[in-house]
Length: 69
Image (cartoon, rainbow, N blue to C red):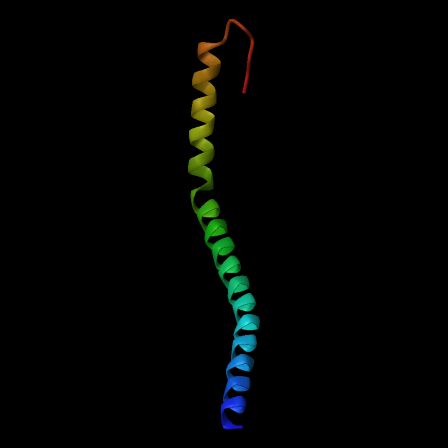
């Protein structure tokens, strides 16, 4: 009887862990999103400037064809 009770407790503990992992995945996703947002806000103007510079270089090379970024 004790063995049956112990097995039931182990199964119950496993089921409880499954619910916790879903919450943990949610927290990880939120953390990753927050980091991405912080990087974009911090480096956004620098990245935009790099794209503008690249666009200007492409436009100067292809000025004859009338292409623009």
